[in-house]
Image 1 (cartoon, each protein chain N blue to C red):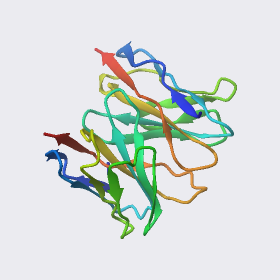
Image 2: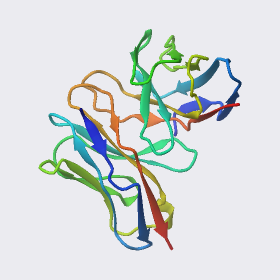
Image 3: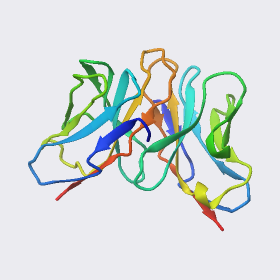
Image 4: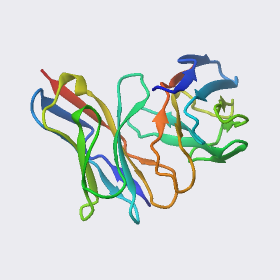
Length: 115
Length: 113
């Protein structure tokens, strides 16, 4: 978990609310990622960013939004359009670059529950 | 479609015995292969990776993995299991072209004293 922080650890959302999950890294990595983890499934990619001010949709981007204004920060907003947001959210970072083979390193995660 | 399979949802091993967690993949080209471990309510921790070279890769906490190109497998192994190895293990594959990881569904490893 070292070098990547996520907050809060637990988050509760009411129906119709937008919430923002924080992800910060001090590893000087270019690339950052957001994943969603549901029980019995592997990780699913929501969004990723290879450089500042640029990001791409992953496999399940609908109902989510991101920004990458700073190299070290990649916040994820779960909007009211996400119909089933209860899940464990993981942020990761890696060295970056298309030919990069660097490992992705993960934060401790945020558990989001819809009330 | 490209995919990663971890055929066992759960593996049970007695402490001190060798363990194997299986991973097979269907990805074109020469992919990069990874193993991660996850403890309850925690993020994933990197264990080891195969990029090229020797088929046997050594990683953290005494784990190793063997790459078999003909069988498209990358099984995780440890000669002597510890109770503290009990966790959820994920195999991931990155196609040679691209940078997204394709993830297996995970295998729960239970080491009994």
